[in-house]
Length: 216
Image 1 (cartoon, one colour):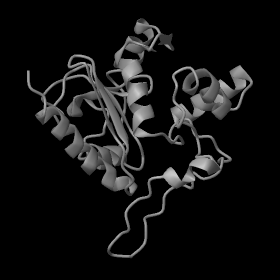
Image 2 (tube, one colour; image 1 turned 180 degrees about the vertical axis):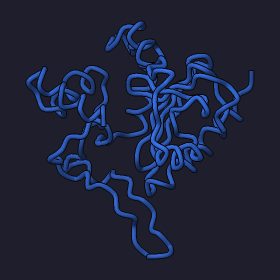
Image 3 (tube, one colour; image 1 turned 180 degrees about the horizontal axis):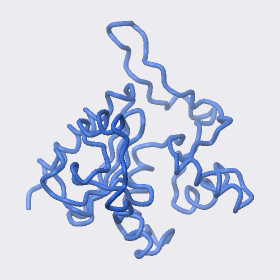
């Protein structure tokens, strides 16, 4: 919810709607033509639909991205493509710059991807019960914490998937994922459309396959 609140703060401070701000200040300078809060009419034929559920014969319900939503959710309301997501990830790996366009300073990127949770932060038991087994809890037990907009790996050996401290990532509600590993100079993007609780399974498989493919 904090990222949704931040989205509203951006609107108040900038005097623009969140889609205008993101479009003009982020997507346009970084050349992300397919990133926004909905898909425009001339691009709807490119929308990736979830597969039909064999048990019901229907597609699982997902958000309608064919029209501008009333609520521009900063925490989970954007759509994009594999190429745009990879380019955005590469900008972060480069320390805030890509192809001569600088969006952030290296120090800001480092600050955003650092551990920002206090050591005595309290966690909801219900949240832990759901998210820790899936490997997406920002807890010391999982070897993870949270920065400013990203989950951050803080330790080796605690998380069920391989990786190095300093790796940071974001996972979308419907299965999408991107992660950046500065030590390996690696970015990886997964574009998937599945029901919410199925996403972590495929995201974990993807993460493992990427690291299994690395050769020193």
